[in-house]
Amino acid sequence: MSFIETVDLCQRFGKRDILKNINLKIDRGEVFALIGPTGSGKTTLLRLIDLLDVPASGMIYFDGNDVSEPEKKRFETRRRMAFVLQKPTVFNASVYDNVACGLKWRGAGRSDILNKVSDILEMIGLSGYTKRNARTLSGGEVQRVAIARAIAIEPEVLLLDEPTANLDPVSTTRIEELIRDIMHRYDTTILMATHDMSQGQRLADRVGLLLDGEILQTGDWREVFHYPLNREVADFVGIENTIDGVIASSQDRVVTIDTGNNVLEAISDYPIGDKVCACLRPEDITLALSQTSTSARNSFDGEISRVVSTGPLARVEIDCGFPLVALVTKRSAEEMALEKGKQVYASFKATGVHVIRREGA
Image (cartoon, helix red, strand yellow):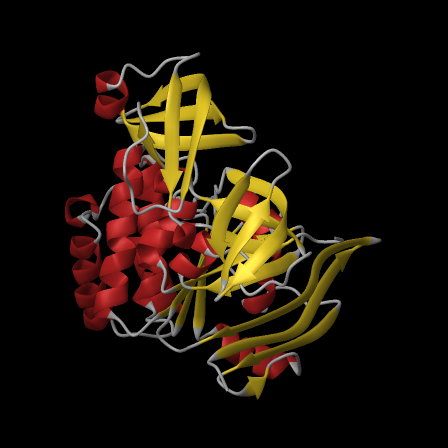
């Protein structure tokens, strides 16, 4: 059995279902990221796993044991975990006392506390803040103190709820570096909730997408971000090109998809006649000003309807009989003088198209 496992876990507030049949398996030492928009149920799930709340139904297993009840077992299990809230609270005391409090409550000796707190403060980059009142710190510093307080007790499981929400980019980078440091130094299982998809990619071994209280897909970041199981997942992970069509032909898994105004090729096992959705990431599309010889099976001419620069990249919207969005470097966009009304050729490989069956079709 996995280190942490939930079975058909549900939570309800009043008549509203917050979580529906959550089935998760998390291995010891794994970093697992729950990704999803605000209000999707991420915090509720963390609170259940931390045994702060009791589920409406379902089971929670920790290290092979059912920890749903009795209360003594729940208390013993909670002592093996630490939870850092999205808006952590610090005591009106020194940074040292904030980090040391968990150790004091557990009866650690004074010299042990001193050595451990000193090491951890150096690790989080706040060794010179020992006597400073924690309530005078910046948001990023408070978050680091809260994480330090959590890891001081050497928990087997660390739960992080939106650890960098509302922080500036510099503070976010420091928190992520601290999480990586914890991953490398300790054999800690980390379960973090975040709405930042790129953060999940950077930190987690696996991610689980939580939408409207349901886990829609789990896997490593490449599985979830490149091979979504349905259109809801595709929309959330930023696959802007989702093209409806019907499988018109199939040979050796190479299918043609009739979109109504055009036909494109992809790799799929779906049979002829199935109503599908072709998913294509914008960065997998190549643009050219003239039709050139290419190994890509798909090449369409179209008219640019919009160009938007976003930092080093340019987002190019094209009408090819169906809408396409491509991402190119800003330099490429300038060299090709891409602008509204210009004709371009958009090419992409059949292997770059992920095909999913349309729900209800």
